[in-house]
Length: 72
Image 1: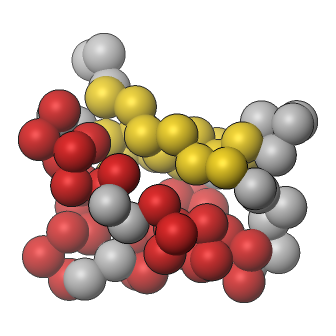
Image 2 (image 1 turned 30 degrees about the vertical axis):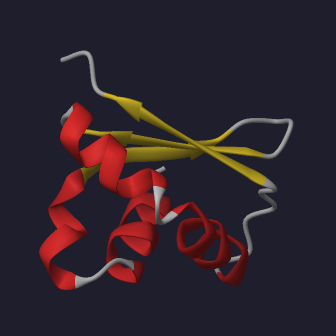
């Protein structure tokens, strides 16, 4: 999970790299990206193609991406 989070963070522009708190892939191939706030979530939703491409390049089999806001 930590390695995937790092991969996705590094795929983003430098100013956006701190926006991702965690990332995981469900068994059905859904990439889940957790961010710190709803403002970041809105911004990251525009980057789902980039995030999916980065995950696939890292060997992760993901076909959809969902951005969620951290509850903590």
